[in-house]
Length: 413
Image 1 (cartoon, helix red, strand yellow):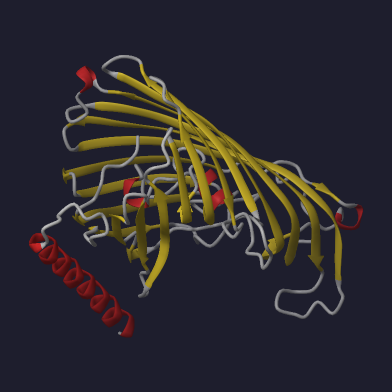
Image 2 (cartoon, rainbow, N blue to C red; image 1 turned 180 degrees about the horizontal axis):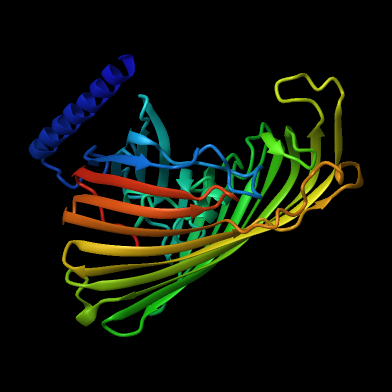
């Protein structure tokens, strides 16, 4: 109850503040004052109904130490957020995106400032933000073409890589779209772990190029690299060779490389009537370090009953999807995604304990149909045949809505 009252009061206060600022602006002689508080405000509302045959808490086979965002079951509030965007002055503008937790309260999803006047196509972003690597990572959930992220994003990035840090991006002054960027972060975003040290704990480099082939065709391609450190990353109930479910703890380095591509086609360049979008991404992650295998049952103090030795594994995943708007406001989409858990190199002390090769490739087929009565609303039906867990085929059904209230800027390509 307190969280609901707190959220209601916060939204009311923001609305009154915005109205007061608007009235002040109207009466000021200098209407071009860059320090005037007059943000673009919006509220994104989302909800989903999910029907699953399998327990969403079970991770993809071969990825027990990776992330598993899972799926909601039954009726749930999904991605809802409060957004504030405004110029700070002639040098900076700020963005605040606050996720509304389904159980109550607000959390900082993205809170950053960005330079407006560095010139020469250079931009500096500081704060908490979604990394620009890949194609989908920077997209907010209400702009996704499916209810969920591809398996490779769910497993390797916990849906999306978000971190606290700085991003320096350069846009080339050429007819062809060319952008290069480097990011330095705290390293708290998965697959990293939070740190209490000076300096950065993660870094990323990425590059994108793109162009229009003619009035009807356009494309964009990219490459990316991310490096971070995992420290005492604990995974519970990991299956082992002894048919037990144990606890493993990993400390080591993680490096992920990726490529992405998207192509769009609209007859006569009219995206409102019909268009086709084809996109795909591939990520490959190498992790190496020390793995501690806990011999005792989960929940029982180790009391020295564990074994630590070297561990290295290379895992990957990819997806390809296509969206077709066949008439105005109606779209259909098809997606196929697959993972490769790789073969681990396990130190001698743990070769009799750790599964090195699962001999299984998680995969999924997804079909969606959505209807957008306007640019501010969308209703979606999604069906999926999920075979990401060996022997546990999951027939999934989702119904989803997204609604936007207030001013909301256009999204990137």
